[in-house]
Length: 264
Image (cartoon, rainbow, N blue to C red; front, side, top):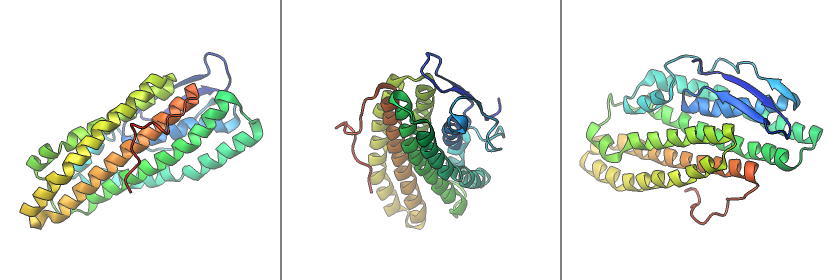
């Protein structure tokens, strides 16, 4: 199944207001699919069929698991593709922001429609940041001088689990938005706690490793940076979950005491 956005969206208040189905094949396509959804709405505000959006991600090898493989296997070819494609996806950010503003000015949406476009503005910013993290992680893979990572260290760090949680959060958010299900969105907020725990545990593990492997200090620092970026990705996914709940139920979760502010 090609990873393309084939989106049918009907702007209105009837019970069939939102029906979208998208193929997801990588973390970057997660960003792509949300953006495709936005652009479908902003074209004319009524009945829209969105053409396949660009050529990003049509290749089979760019599935979600391969992003993880780029890091764990230090696959520089995949990292290069992620690097290039994130820059292409980035080019849509300004267009989306502008079209949201135009849509508000032209159609003066109210109630759930207004919440939708306001949520999309905020979500777009979070997606841009997530894309920046993906770009930075790919850069580590491209620039590191080692040929492989210490398998024992990776297992101890539970880096594979870190990636798995992020991808699971992305999948749940896709389902939450496409099905307009606030419960699924709320479940993502709880999943972020595991990312925080894994990130906190990684600090001491990497510190101990660096002390005993001074020649691999740059690798330890790079892995520490990856953990920080994955944790912050979780924070932005939590933000997106909150915006989905706001859009659907008009509930504001920003001041939820369970959520800690993003680390600087």
